[in-house]
Length: 482
Ligand code: NAD
Image (cartoon, rainbow, N blue to C red; front, side):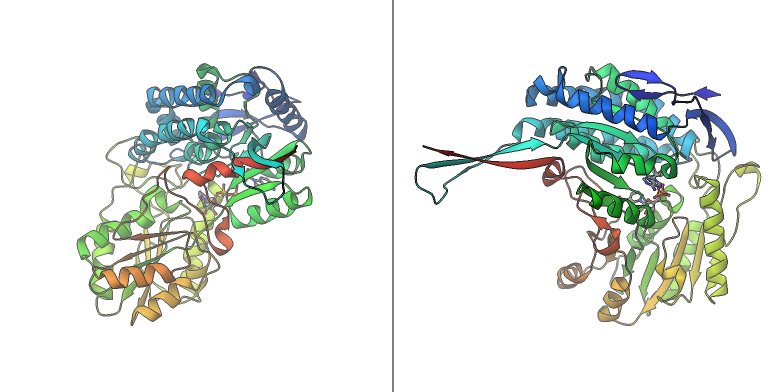
């Protein structure tokens, strides 16, 4: 059994009171690591260390260029340790090793890119309309930033937040999900090795319900960047507003994936499959509603069902596995409950529809069959609520107007995708879809260079891309009279 400690002020420490909890391997259902169960007193320690790191010691004295060098060194270390980080995350959250290898090829880019941006942050000289007055602006770091992440992609979601925060000169307290803390703690070893001064990066582990409020309400925290569910995002938004903290919220989705009658069918089938079944459906951007033009609906769904039905389930550490377990026992039960809800609502289950069994999936793992429903109406719960699992709801449509109306008929607005070869339709439909990211003839492409975030209940703010460093800066206007 692996035993981890928290990382606070450059030291590896136990929680105050010494309590620990177990982290489960979703493939076996057995505990494989123990993690310190942080308390509000640990939050105080971590925030104090981050505050001290921000104000004193080497960090505030570094030039922006030197901060950039450190971030790039961290990127190199992630690349060197990619295999070990990948294995840790797979063991902890059940994502496929191929998916993790792909993610870890890209995660260093966040540290390279924002490391490169560190010394390009500039103020402005403003030709103010007052005589004899010189006005200029400075872009200043906020102070202590908190990053709270979901269990589906701990290292990637952390990179979205940490890389720009440190590039801007802040210090950081990370709170990974209680279901998947191990990879963030492995990552902290690399931050330490890269030579970041003590207190610049800290990790507090524990249960969101026990330490979340302490983190968000802490008087010395300037900013909270959160990725997780709509319900937790709402609570964090409300709590942060009380002390006027800045927030970035990346929440859930119910993303439509539209296939028009002129789509290239082979590509669209692959896109739809990866859109919903990658990471066993546990991605915020999952294309969980498949909208297909009625003239091709039956043949298209048949192709998707055949493709998904052939997927090989099994050990996520094996490169040949195409469907891994879902990450947590509560998530497993939630997905199965939603499958029952869909059946109860009158949808037709044409693939899967329950727990997966058989020699490849072992005995204790949390496996759900890739599941596809037809005969879905967009007002059904299966079409409105985020399942966060391998469950696809298929809905036919008659024309473009109806497709757009159904696509937008959701409180979420994280992502949308569509397949067509008509450029006028591409321009028209992409303009009208209410989603932070729209993919056309592709799906699931994410880059450190491109903004990611939600319309409507899918969140507040954007992560990634040039502008996202502004999430971690504030502008001071200085006026000098003569
Ligand atoms: P969750 O909201 O249950 O937990 C997310 C994090 O919040 C965890 O670290 C948890 O410990 C913490 N938390 C829980 N209660 C808290 C509280 N009261 N105060 C502060 N922190 C608290 O979400 P989850 O189940 O871990 O993740 C799944 C959700 O994340 C899905 O809704 C998914 O769509 C969303 N997600 C969004 C994105 C995106 O970029 N928009 C990416 C990945 C996941």
